[in-house]
Amino acid sequence: MAKYLVQGGLPLAGTTGVHGAKNSILPVLAGSLLNQSTEEIRLKRVPMLGDVRAMVSILTRLGARVGYDGSDLLINTADLNCYHVPDILMREMRSSIFLMGPLLGRLGRVQICYPGGCAIGDRPINLHLEGLGKLGATVKEKDGYIEARGRLRGGEVGLTYPSVGATENLMLAAVSARGDTVIYNAACEPEIVDLQNFLNTIGANISGAGTPRIRIRGGCDLHGGTYRVFPDRIVTGTLLLAGVITRGSITVTGVIPEHLTALLELLREAGVTVEVNGNAITVEAAGPLKAIPRVVTGPYPGFPTDLQPQFLACLALAQGESNVVERVFESRFHHIPELCKMGAQIELSGPQARLRGVDRFKGAVVRATDLRAGAALVMAALAAAGNSEILEVKHIERGYDQLPETFAALGARITREEGARRELSLR
Ligand code: UD1
Image (cartoon, rainbow, N blue to C red; front, top):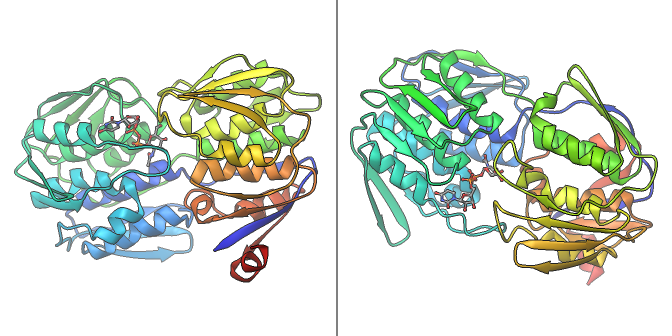
């Protein structure tokens, strides 16, 4: 029931850092299950995100021992003994689907409930299941449950779409298969490279991540090791866009600017001053933003769907007409009605949003329906005239660590409140 209270209208200014990538940490945690040795895996500086906590709970239920040393996570999976992911945890975090690959590889069996849909769309898992089948698993689906069994063998798997999760699941499965595997039309996202680097650190032999063809040598003995995941490119983009939407000037340090090329190009097109200096990116948006006629999301290196809501919120304040086409998750537009409550003028037609830029948002009570939609609403509230409340921030906290504190340090007026009592008084 927690919520954020925002007093908008102040330009953000200053320098901030960014935590490790959620979308790397989750598959890396799943991959740690492949380590049969008694040696420990140390993951450096892991942010305590809602999704990370959920994944740690799952690993613990499966028999792993997970401890903390400051902000490092220590994982020992020598005693892994359970192949059933509890339903409640499976439903809590849809991406636990990529536990299938490591559990099959390690125990020869996995049982999960069907993860179902979520706020951003149906999210089928056919590519995961077909791919595991090609690596020798027998997959049965019945009454909302999936069970896969079998000793995995290497093979060639071509994906009909470069799914991030399916690529990761298959990489994880192929590490313990007998023989080599090649994945064609693999996703090229930086998080895939991060997963490869982590698995190679603990003894795997994988090459080609970041290209559409990934080769995995099967049957390597894995061991412990120390790894630190990449900085979160989506959090970086969100912080930069918060600077832009409030007409401020923000520097984000400790990032990998190449991961954000598509965003930075669009920002320049919108009239924002963008400077890249080593591992730091600075944006400055003094004047009005220019509309962008057509923004289309797509697989990396295309414009990321995970920045679509935040970028769309900025375009809703640009001069002229912009169009945003969502090609990855076609119904990922739950932020639009909430932005309209704040005064945005947006028409939705299938996967395309047409925006007529307005001068200003006004404060409102809005609801975060999912992680990135929620981030977009916080940004809009920071730019709005007057006060806003963002409800259901648990969605935001799945992927952003201490977002109110980060924005407050950049000059925003934002606080987090455990909202049960205040929410009642709003009705
Ligand atoms: C991952 C990210 C998510 C991001 C998305 C796209 C994690 C934990 N999540 O999600 O933040 O928005 O990549 O960059 O890393 N599809 C199928 N069949 C499948 C799998 C996917 O049809 O078996 C479709 C999906 O419905 C969607 C598209 O492929 O339309 C992309 O999905 P995918 O790349 O798999 O995204 P996720 O791995 O779920």
